[in-house]
Length: 171
Image (tube, rainbow, N blue to C red; front, side):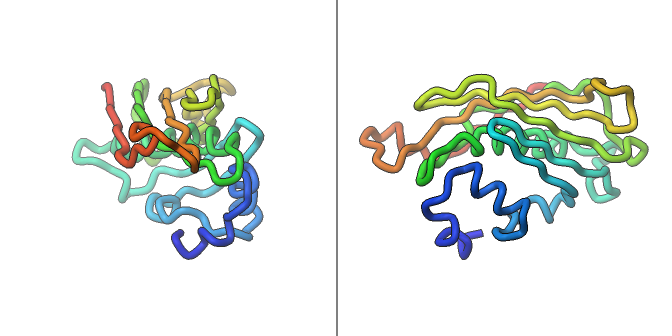
């Protein structure tokens, strides 16, 4: 991803994400690591699809919650990313995930749908849901809310230059 940074200079967040969809820019390696399948981007909306794989499983026989949280975080975070002007970055302030049902190989393809709920000049709030595409339309498996700090390039306060991502899980 670092080699692609010069290609992204001057692009808005939406343009960067669309460049990934169009194959002009590389996807972040986390997508390959966790075997995400598809990616769709809108102005304040992102959807990511995936299928449960054996290597996602935890010792109790279901997909590890961290895989699900990462899928949801990707959708919510990228929804915020789609709203950014060129040269503006962001990082997580918190991540709250509610696991409503287990995900297994039998779940088939799932779709994480992320939307921006609030976009301010310094913070943004996004939410994502995970939909089992085999289930009745609108049935959700898991829900996440994700608060992001907007990092402007000319930040003048030390707290505007946050480099640490803080992630909290609630089960």
